[in-house]
Amino acid sequence: MTARVLAIDAGNSKTDVAIVTADGDVLATARGGGFRPPAVGVDTAVNGLAATVAQALTAAGLTSVTHVSACLANADFPVEEEQLAAALRARAWGATVTVRNDTFAILRAGAGEPRGVAVVCGAGINCVGMRPDGRTARFPALGRVSGDWGGGWGLSEEALWHASRAEDGRGAPTALSHTLPARFGLPSMYALVEALHLEHVPKLRRHELTPVLFATAADGDPIARAIVERQAEEVVSMTVVALTRLDLLSEETPVLLGGGVLAARHPQLNDHIARLLADRAPKAVPRVVTSRPVLGAALLGLDHVGAKAGAQEKLRTYYDA
Image (cartoon, rainbow, N blue to C red):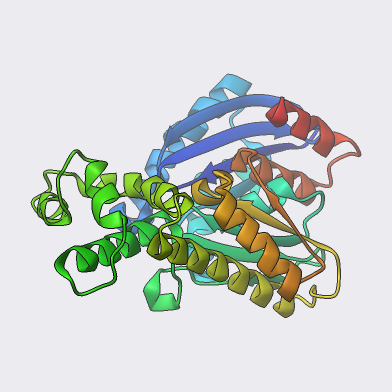
């Protein structure tokens, strides 16, 4: 019987699951909620994952597969990957289990082979690199404590900081002091800060300010433009370090850009990234990845089971159709 892969891409906000044969045929898919072990604990998070996996297995008429390829949010250190892999093995979904950080799904989805660098800029920011021989480069990606800056959350906080200081006179003037509160129908930054503090505007709605930042930058505001350019610098800094660690600076290498912030293709951000890479890593080939990350998890699974020629192309056709 042909090998079958259970592919899992579990992010903070949603989980996608697919059952795929070694020939590249998709037998079943399912979608569930977010995967947040730091917030709810490993057992509870995996219990939530189990419901989505059970739905896919049932639809495929299976109880287990050959290999489980899981790309999971919050698997930031090898010890966390090992802990989560043990939890998945205990479920007996597959004979073998591999757990990686979910950024690897973006990398594999965008690359023709398991080689390159991926930067994900969504709510936060992360970067991984991989060579076909299995060598990887990665970052803890825990926020400021691990040296990271940016992503949608970080960008909105930076915009709020500058806008507040502009309004009360501590900082340079910026149109952000008007455009940010206007997003919520408020007259001033003071009113917005109060609304956020008292949760009249829910904390999670801060992500709505990131598109406002980009629109303000596109209109020429110097402060907003500086924030966007700093994000580009961060993306390129992580990329160059990953390429250097993997000895790929001198080779033509794909650099895959994923996550909501980068996939939105804001010209100022993505064009500045391309310019900086042309200067610092001329062999890098940047490309925005819009494929669903579960494709990457499935391709990693096919790599593991030694899929037949053409299986990857068939799988890509399914997800890109």
